Length: 105
Image 1: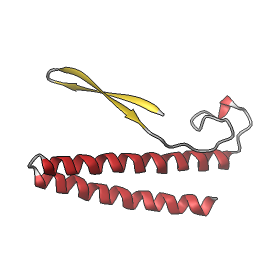
Image 2: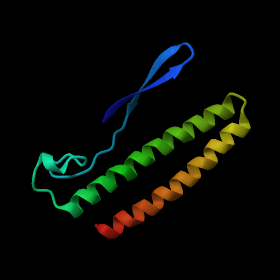
Image 3: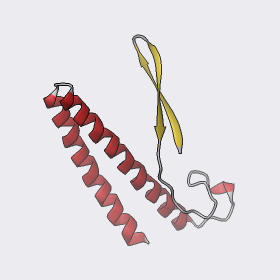
Image 4: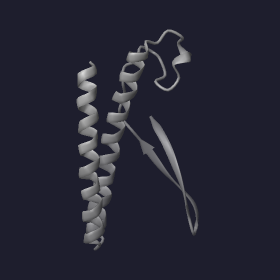
């Protein structure tokens, strides 16, 4: 999935290409639009969406960790440490979601 995130800066609008290499199986259905195939099982739909979110969260945790390390490299150790602490909390939440997902499969 390729996404482009736009953000505004005092010098104008900037874009950040954002690619994710994660996928999930949902037998041809869009996990956000069950009406697209017309025959989705609600539990299967929910599990597919949860799997997508777990993978999506992991990708963002990795990006945030890189930002935390970059802040440290740029001389702002305190900010870098705070971002890495937030990543740790983020990952703990994602582990809980992964456990729920495993129990549903």
